[in-house]
Length: 204
Image 1 (cartoon, rainbow, N blue to C red):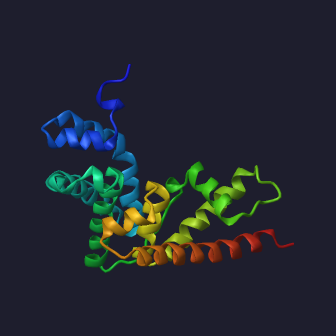
Image 2: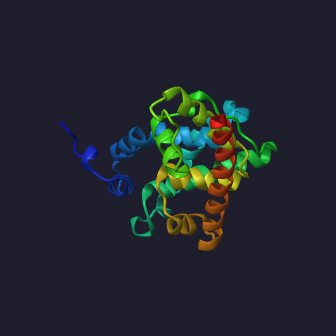
Image 3: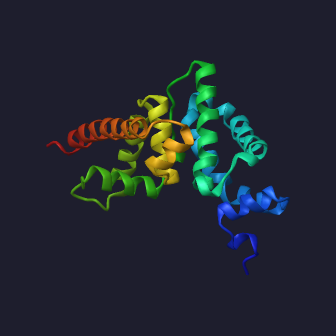
């Protein structure tokens, strides 16, 4: 049986928390803990894996301290939260002097492999071959590694959080065309990187 908090939207939970309902924040944390941690880890990469926990906790502390700045009218809670995580992770990358990340098999999932097949509009002759697409998925993560950090983070927000270009532009205080360009360049680089890899795989 669902509790009252489980049936509430993210925005309703945050508004309830701002009114003093601590359990509403607990529900938000439980709902988004895994996905937000995965996002932080992917932006930081293996090189800064040891700092992922710290940045993740800093993110939730920032969400608490910045709760008065949240407005459901301005956009989704997820976009607001992921933007805070995005900024903290990029700040950590800048201060550490590390701009590249390394991904592992743990970052792969069926959703990413389905995205890869759909976006590239390419199908292996044995598309049901899980080993083939998992290998391609590992290559995709390596292609992501080569993206500039700002492009990589915005790309992940857009494709994992589902944030629209308009939402990202508002949240990042950046121009619509700036965000659109980052996404366009990121996708173009990923397509080029992956098409070369897949074509080489399928060459006789």
